[in-house]
Image (cartoon, rainbow, N blue to C red; front, side):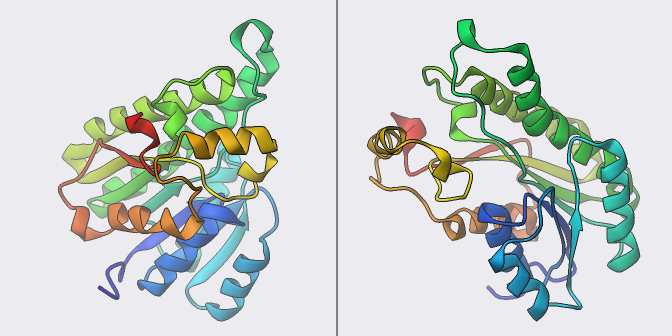
Length: 249
């Protein structure tokens, strides 16, 4: 149904490439205005989107770990399009791959800064304006490894698990304000970040996926669009797998 995001103003983090860029493209096609944010410069796909949607899209460099950067990003969104009624906390980082007894404090803290603190700061920054608007939708992107156990990679898995509970807490807390908060848990997706795994790790991830392949970013974006849309008006504090069946094993 075309135009299902008409009237939506969205901030999407981690938007330079991968799931974030695919989500920005879909949101624009469905009528939303988008402030795309990332700590790095936009990739090829996003550059093309920016050229084609000069009136409905803006890009901002944003370090999600910085409260000041979030404040500046919100101000840019309000100045350009108005206060956001959708936030997609998609940015994050991989862990070191190490088990508990070999992991470092620095690596644990780095994972939590990227995968939990950034998400927390995004919500902390945007929720007050959503309350004034009378509602909104927040989609936090975690991972299937924030739900299902896996050996090693303790920093990544623990931080992604914390993102699941952070989303559930916010969903319950802000439901009286008509702010819906949901958590998306993708499986193995073809993104620049996931391409950093070894051939053996890639083989294992596909083996653990009942559909027998990795997803493309444009297979994840539609669930984000649904959760952002008014079609999901009675959906909050939930966890949604887009993992090819991985979590069922």
